[in-house]
Image 1 (cartoon, rainbow, N blue to C red):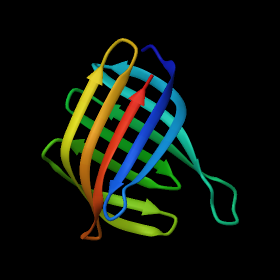
Image 2: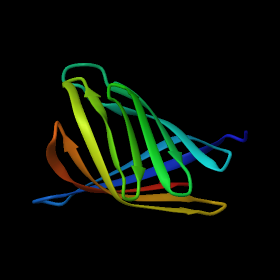
Image 3: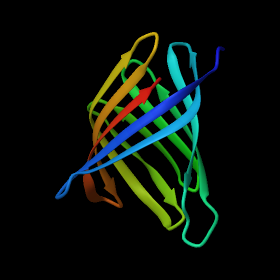
Length: 140
């Protein structure tokens, strides 16, 4: 297993009344196991009146699916496969929510220097529609 340092650029857009886009960049580690791309990184959140909250994130990408696992301040597992629905929980410091993700499309592009995953999905929390989202992840 050959692990290398990578840059992870994530652009997330929430499509509703007002388009909101969030661009974030992280440093992480990448390796490939049995043609599955594994990316590991940490993210920090500002807590109100507290020290920053930490999350450890793991992204698994193969030919047609993306799985995101978050542990720490937010605990969840999300699975994205074109045309499929995923049910799970989304646990935050403010409470736990039942989550339903319907993945409209997953596109994966990989070459020797970069990996990109584009995801379009809708999200429901506690059986209430939240929004439609697009995520573009670039790993270089």
